[in-house]
Image (tube, rainbow, N blue to C red):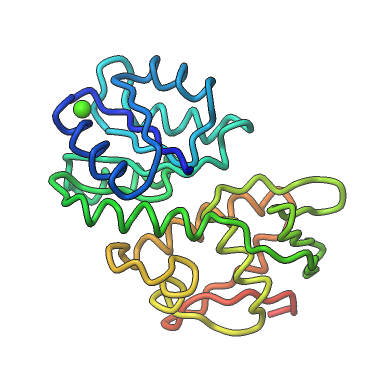
Length: 229
Ligand code: CA
């Protein structure tokens, strides 16, 4: 059974979420602060973590950043729960490494849709074929991209994005097409999210001199191309 860890100090909210997720067939583990969350994760690594922005010992954003920096936990999908509806906070949440965010108040149904979308897009593609382009090797079975002997450090969304690009090269995709193909048509994700993840993907590829393959096509979208511009 897939396990979800909820890190939220407000008990009624935590219990409401836990109830909905258990009913949807997930195993749920609860933590009321970051310290407890760490303990729970050490017991068993959850398949996804819901992290509230405002927590008593450390902010949810800091916890997310810490998880995404650690190679043991960086692949673990994170959805941030935030009461702050401001655009800037959403963007900082995503730049901190969260795979998605949900603004309070949300309905259990909306949360479930987001969880399923994140789990879908972070799931392994399930093929043994290795695709090579621009010196990078996409190993879908191993769920990683390597350049020579080195593994490119990618978050789950960046992996999905790069994997999509490498399997669909030399074609321009608009933001909405990318949302459809990479994010699985999640209606709650805004087009700006695509730019945030493209930025993160390029940053990860920079060290390998491969960021140049992710090209911006003005007024149209993005293209993966290993041909000279
Ligand atoms: Ca809280």
